[in-house]
Image (cartoon, rainbow, N blue to C red):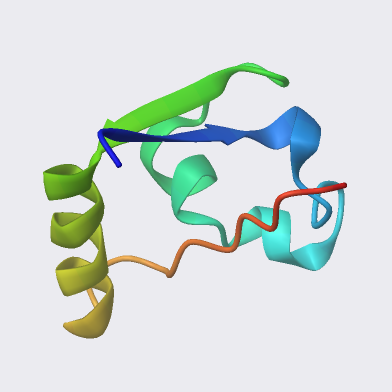
Length: 64
């Protein structure tokens, strides 16, 4: 796996309480429907930051 595509438009948690505490929202405050592409090393770094309590966890749930 070279990259992970996180697209709010495909997230089944979109427009729920999870959205407000998602690391994508936390990091980007991006426009609706914009995707965030991170590579595996960046994903691991975000996971480590989450485990240290520095950022909220990724709550993206890919829809069908």
